[in-house]
Every structure is written in C-alpha cells, then in structure tokens.
Length: 400
Image (cartoon, rainbow, N blue to C red; front, side):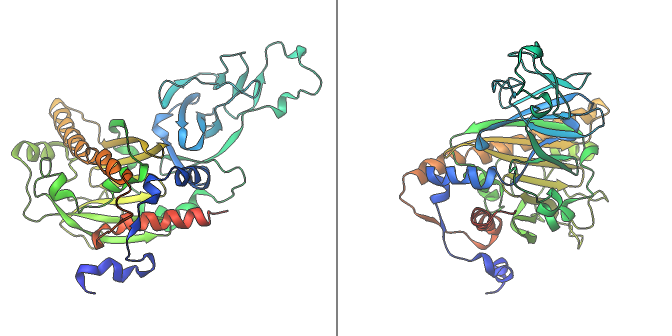
C-alpha cells in the first residue's frame, strides 16, 4: 500500500477496519475492564523517589480496582505493597486525603486509627491493644496486612492485584522493558505535577495523547509548526507499544522559549543533541527526533527525550469519568536563571496538556449519543489502534 499505509503494512495482524466505540461508552464493558484488566495487569503506582527513606509510605486509591493501596519502605530498603485495610474490623489503616496521601514513621510502622492495631513495614501485625481479651482462635501471626505483589522497574513502583497471578513484572514488560531501560529517570528530579478529573472514559483521555495527528490543530497555540504529524520507529511489544515523535524541520520556537532551552533544556519540541538516551531510542540518530512516546499497558504513557521525561496516567473512576495525572521531569535547577528556564519549559508543557485535555469531554459527550458506532483511524494512529487490540487480547486471555 506504500508509504501512506506503512504501519498497516508492517503490522497487519492488528487490522485496518473501524474500531468500535463500545469500549468507550458501555457501563458493562467498564465493569469487565475493572475485573479483567485493572485487577490483573501490572500498574505503576509510584516512583521510588516518593519513598526515599525507611518508614516512608504512600497510599494510592484505585477506584478502578475497588481498593486502596498502601506502599511502605522497610528498614531493609524494600518497598512493599499492601491493601489499605485493617485485619480487625476492616477500616482503612491510612485515611486518604484525595487520591494520594504520603507520610513517614521512623519506626517503619503504620497504625490503624480505629483501634490502634500496629503493622510493620513487612505487613506483620506487631501490636494489638488489649490483646488478652481476644479468644484463642485469634492468631496475631495470621492477621497481618494483605500483601500485594510489588516490584520495581527503573524506579517505577508497580503492583499486581491478582493474588493468583505469578507473572513477574520483567516478564510482563518483556522487550518493552529492555527498550525503555537505561535512561536516567532518577537523575532528572525536578517534577511538575498536574492532575484533574475529566468526564470521559479513560481510553478517550489516553487516545488523545497517543498520536501526533492532532498536533497541527490542537497545538497550534503552544507548538505552532513544531512537530510532524507522522511517527517514526514504531514498535509493538505485545501489549505495549512505542514510537518516536518527530520535529517539523522548518519549525522554530519563539525567542523566549529558545533562550530558556539553551539555559536548561527540558523542551519536548527542541532539537536535542547528547548522549543521555539509551541506544534503543532513536537508533539511527535522526536529527528531527523529538521524544519517544511509549505506552505501558494498560494506562501509562511514558515519554523520554534528551534532558527530560514525562508521563500521563489515566485512572478510571467510572465508565465516563477519569482521573488524569501528568508529570514532567527535568534536572533540578541550580541557579535563578535555570529556575526561570525550567519553569518556562514545564509551563509550555502544561499549556499543551490543557489543549489536549480540552478535547476529551466533548469527545465523550458526542460518543455517548450513540450516533457513531465506530471510529475510523488513519495509519499514523497506529498506537491508538494497537491499544484497542491489546485491550481485547488482555481481556480475552490475561497472563497467568
């Protein structure tokens, strides 16, 4: 079919036909997703830097899996995950404030606010007030926290809520993990973090970030004529996927943005040169390479470039409501001028993300009408198409 259908030619197994809108609007489909996907897939829930010291903890509420997750770093340095529920009467051990909460305890323990049961960072129940009043059937050793499989890849703390599952995070990531590894994620430690709740399905939000076809229209304000609408280096890794977003050779930044880029870097649309990227990224050294756009199934978009990386994550709250979390990482500024340049970089990213999120609720409202039963995707929307292919595959046959 030639250059205009190059990805269809390369990946014929994922099809070319229209994609059903049902996964984006059906309540029943969403309930199946919760059980078959979000309660079985590996999910990224934290960065190790969020729990730097023994006794540091984080709680993440996961509406999409009907649970609250407690992560705590032990004195042995290991981050472990548990369901945030006390073994006594079922109260939450940590009462969240919002969808995420953080805290620390020098003794590396957490205590339930209801009756004071105390748990160690390894999940063991270590103290029960008035323990002698319980009956002989009570065994403290059998009433620790309910553990969640927790593993770390490149500083990303991931959990799997399937108690019967045995697939490791490394096996789940497969070649995708190797492709995106060896990037200095932890060294780029200045983070600008944003979140909002949107009246749309999580895939509607996800899809808006997973292609470059929209850049000339949606981002005409923040990135006028900066990016190409075509992708490069598309690779499909089973459930996961990645591609390079490229620059328009004739595109230029505004003067103030160009000056900020020269001071600290950190602009996703700049012409970057350097050696920070692993050899798997931009392997042929394209001068128009902007950043790697990758997706870790099901709900994490991870992007890396010279001098920066950023993520988008989409947490379902209902079949038509989503919590979007965006984080933008660059190197910590050391001078006032670098601080100004860093703020300039992350504000430009924020403005672009506002442009992206501005499309989502209108998309959902139109889809909910039921007028259109399918979406027609063009060749450069290959990552979007693969997303529905991977979702269908996982729901039919999740890993053991």
